[in-house]
Amino acid sequence: MMHKGISLIILRQTAAGLFCLLILLSSHTSSTAATTEEIASLLLFVEQSECTFIRNGKHYDALKAREHIEKKYAYYKERITTAEDFILYSATKSSMTGEPYMVICSGVSISTSDWLKAKLDKLRTNEILDSKNRRGKRFLVN
Image 1 (cartoon, one colour):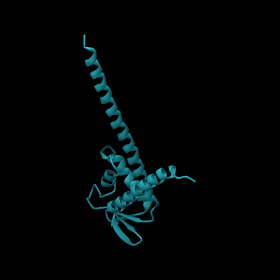
Image 2 (cartoon, helix red, strand yellow; image 1 turned 45 degrees about the horizontal axis):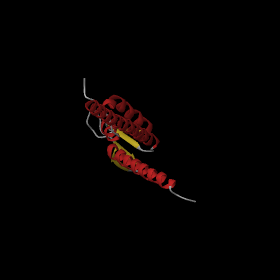
Image 3 (tube, helix red, strand yellow; image 1 turned 90 degrees about the horizontal axis):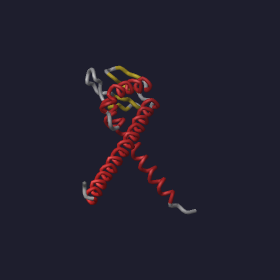
Image 4 (spheres, one colour; image 1 turned 30 degrees about the vertical axis):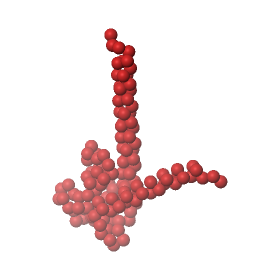
């Protein structure tokens, strides 16, 4: 028969381990949800842009670009854990030729990868600002 003190130590260690596991799982779930939201925002950004997309030397409108990027996203989804991975695997270059994807907006040409990374930075900056504003409003007194 085990001593009561040893049983209590084992029980505490098991509980602590389970607690840590729950924290890890919940943070993974929230980061996955945030990543999914960022990717959805980037896809909408592509579709709503009035830019021309260049893939393997051919020009495409925004809707065709979104459709192509979504197809690549579906193909590489198992490898994608961040919005940066999404951009890398789905919107950077042709898998067939290795040519970088380009976008022309208002006469300015830029790689689709750089364009989407800039948008992602703006999305994250706005999210941080929105979060701070929501917290600040709780403390405002009329």
